Image (cartoon, rainbow, N blue to C red; front, side, top):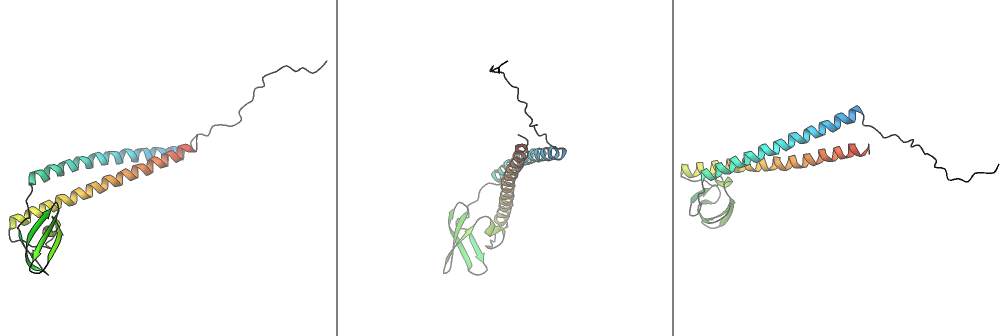
Amino acid sequence: MGLSMDNEEVEVKNTEKKKTPTKKTKEMLEENANKIEELKQEQVDLAAALSELDKEEKDLGEKSALKLKVTHKKYGEGQVVTQDGKYIEVKFADVVKKFVLPGCIADKFLEVDDEAVYNYYVKSNEIHKKRMNSELRIKSATFAIQRHEDAIEKLNAKYK
């Protein structure tokens, strides 16, 4: 009776059990997924609002401030001498100063006599502020989505 040297395959049982997510983890995963969907919908809504603002801005038209006569509390009377996009330069008696449209007129840093011109810049400024707010909220939602995706990834990594 000698030793048998046959190659027998020995079945090795894997004693490691795959971890399953707890109820709390499942809830956290679902909560993050729901929040991502809400944020994506918010981005869609804000993009639609930006389109509306584009239409409003187009309907409002564009008025040049060039040669517009203005009054400043400190510098007195002046006239717009250049306009480069949203920037204007105003020549006062002894100095030339740069301002940003439409806020400088809408917020009355520069005052104009013509009520229609003033109302145009007030409306233009409102549109500008709404646009800036919407763009900021879209960026914020993008970062929030990334944070929730990272959280989901971390939670799922525990169970791989």
